[in-house]
Image 1 (cartoon, chains in turn purple, brown):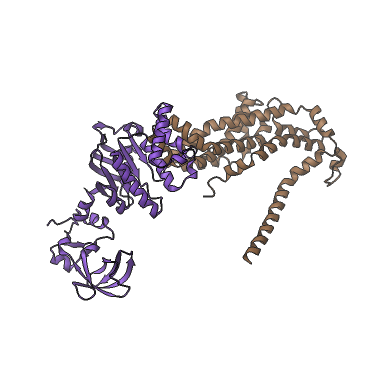
Image 2 (tube, helix red, strand yellow):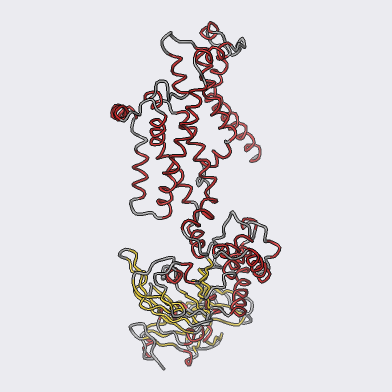
Length: 334
Length: 274
């Protein structure tokens, strides 16, 4: 079991209201990602749930039990830290066994659990090594192993992949998703990387300045961002946000169109642009354009489109995929 | 070319380092050499070749018992170091892991007491010691040595503890360790190298401390520093005997320092290269 409820949770550091007030419902077994730019309060929110920080106000409930004042270990959660936070003076075996030892479990049971966890995480050959003798990915697995053996009601991940290189990050992302499918335990995952958020989450919580901007499934956020912040944050490359005449003609202060929702042509179209940079990724090409009367825009072309710096390209937005926002930056429905 | 100049500069720096080291070490070497000279040889002028007599050592030991001040030095330096650690570990702990806005000020204030000339407080301390009956007692000197070295001990431990990532302690807390277990299983093992170098350095500092130990002791609690000083008194100067006494006084700490130099250098440069 691992349902978590936050009610009017607040966190102030002196004068600074890092979390003004947050309400959030996490159901059992969900993979929830907190995403936001740095300073958005996502890590603070996770630490409040973990009990590593005290709340200034509000209540945190786990499986119906009020744990607002409970010590971290009493909450039945396990956490994987950004820096892995392994105990450098202990072997992998002892690192993974540490929470069980603290729980005064029998040694024979500890051994069995550690072996099991090591097998799941491909660490069986490394049990006697110290963390210093392991690669980044292996260390991350040990940190996950230490979390798994506790059989927590929920896992908390604090930017666990940000110290890894791009290739390894991709692999670990899959491994964590896979782990979630196997264990079916609630996971809360903090990241600033919207790709991690989109690929892993059942539910994304977008945070900005300590406030929740939107909660929803990846595709909900992608298709119907509630405001300009979410529109700009979710999706890569970013959504093009257009103000002025075009937006007004659509009855909005700001119009948004994603780079992948425009048709490109070298002959004709609604907007005329000049390619400033063409990023060739193989399957796709991202074109960064200077568009007459609008300014800078990004468009996604197929890899075969073959545009280069200085070329003229015409863009036509798919109006059914157009997002409209009012003068407060909120989405205009319909 | 680049390679050649690197080799050249390496040689130059090595030579300079050796010269500096020899200049620093020379007084100690000369004291050792002089201790093997006869008294007339000793005052005769500069010479690096002694006649090799052990007479001075025998005289020093028979005239004044070496083992009493030696025992005092051991008790005072180890005692004051342990006492200092007992106070400093929790203090450094609190400052490293639960700092407030005033933590830096407290550290500076503690260090500033080391900048004050000791003579300035000699009289009040002497009177306090006299009134409390602490003059020429091991307890009195242990307290004194603890107090004068405490700022350095706290400072050193603080820099050490600060290098221990807070996330590891938080991980321990998540894993169910209470404060005591966190200290025993996670923090202390990680801080052992730091605590060890602090301990060694403080023993050396306490062993070598000469001002307070000489001022506040006469016979009963007098350590080796006072033992050396006593050779430069009433009957005039006896260079050879004084050198023998000095050699006997510094030998134990020199040996300790030699065997623990790796640990000491590691401790003193900790956090500097990162």
